[in-house]
Image (cartoon, rainbow, N blue to C red; front, side):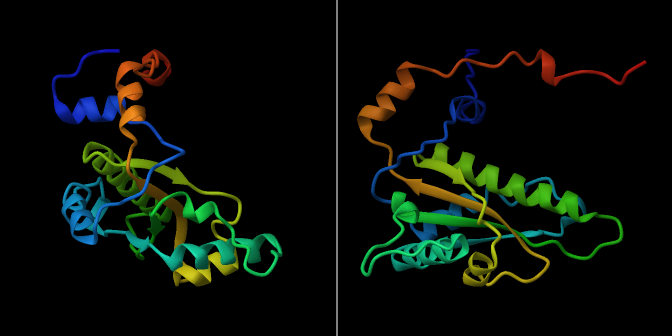
Amino acid sequence: MPRFTDPVLHAMATRRSLAKVGPGSPSDDELRDLLAAVTPVADHKALRPWRLLTLRGEDRGRLGAALDAAAGTEREPGEVNTKPFRADLLIAVIASPRPHPGVPEWEQHATAAGAGHLLELALWRAGWGVMWRTGMAVNAAEVRELHGLADHELLMGWLYVGSIDSELRARLGATPRPVLDPTPFLGALPR
């Protein structure tokens, strides 16, 4: 792996999606501080076509119930969908396009995805484990209603955020991810 002396490039190169995170999560004040690094996301006409929702505590249980309803899953009394409880904090990433004659909706969705990814990088750099999760029911009616989405909005998934176990952190540092060959990703116009 190339050695990056710049801490931002190093954080980008070493970022990992962690399917399993530990307890704890950044406070809303910490999230607001990190969002200062997200707001410069590439955004044609500065429309800010995205928003975020935090799900903590019982909100995660409400999400589990909405996911079950969307999938037609029935559970025994007292049994809950545990998937949303894999992290203490879930952050819903929502594309919220604004009508504009010069900025198509797909471009605004790309901006929202960029904001979500920048937040993921900022959380990683701040020492948090993150996994961006979606699924087939992400925009099911029950899930959309729970999140209060308007008809024009698109739920792009949730960032599952939590602590990183010190042993896992040490293993991640000792076994860097192989760097992909950039050649196939960079080209020129065909002649």
